[in-house]
Length: 461
Ligand code: PEP
Ligand code: CO
Image (tube, rainbow, N blue to C red):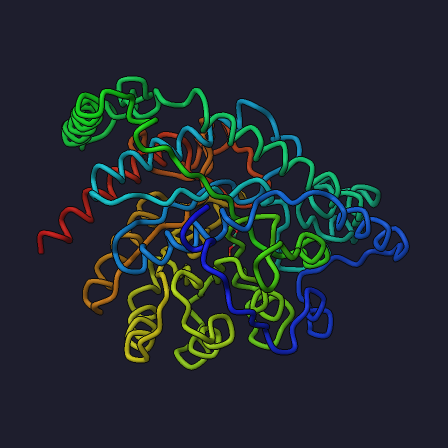
């Protein structure tokens, strides 16, 4: 038990809120379930099923996020844009975990800060879309909203929202969590040693010698710590791993919203760290209503159109008591917009003295389509937005406390650029994502090294 848990909590409550109060608001991006009885039966079943995380893990993450707000930790949040049920498979899960852990080792040694590791997985199954329907050759069908809702194939049967998929999603999330926890508890220690990493790609980069020096320094650091402690660093520094997903499908989230003994209030026990997407961030709408009442740490995506007043109202609504660790703001502006859109928000939040963790998502403002309609992102734009984010925070006297990335441990070709300089023609080779393009293993590791390079440089200024 942590110290936080041992202290008796004064009972509080959130005025006018219940796990179902979102239903009185406008809920965007929800499917239309045609069979109301099937939905009700599914929700009754889901509400009895065990939770996926515990309240003490949630408190621990909140404590760590509070430290990140003070500059004592750095958040690494990453994973698929959309998980699929088919990808709930051992190698995909372990490769994704591997790249996240390796990135975190790079960040720990490079930034000299503990890293909070949060996966975008074990529940990242529901997606916001730009339209409710998709029309091909005159046939119009409901859009694919993620595996928690329907299937991607363009047939009426596949696109029909099926509430039973929530039961499947819950089960797959549990399997993913179980496997991740087992890997973390057991055999992943070697991942701390760069000599076991796949670093072949570095040879293709003009920065190869710089990367090699960094990797050598990390290796030295790990060995030094192990010699000092006489144990593998894995045991020395038992890794915590947390999960997150966009809390989009509210009938699902409601069923996993539970009370626990000895604590007041309600917890979303489907994930440690739910977030509100940019498309469902309306102050009076259902997603903000739902999230204001749960006790988890929560995040909200902030796009370039959000103004200072709107931001302050969201902060007030989601964290009225200015609780430490409660609220993270994930800005996702785009490389072309961040310089004009971000500074006024940083100034405003700073001026009003609000406690938030600023996190950069350099993915979602940098999506583009190639001439043949393939969605992609350029590594240089992702890196460029991230570098600007560090600079803009430094100039504003605020702190960039984390990054939010879409990545996979597989060798996909979805984003262009990086050390191997993937181009448009390469995209067709291994383009597997169902929604947004992800950084592959090599691009992810390279980005972690470039963050260290940037942060190292920033702290010397
Ligand atoms: C996402 O994170 O996949 C997403 C849809 O992002 P945003 O809400 O920032 O557009
Ligand atoms: Co995405």
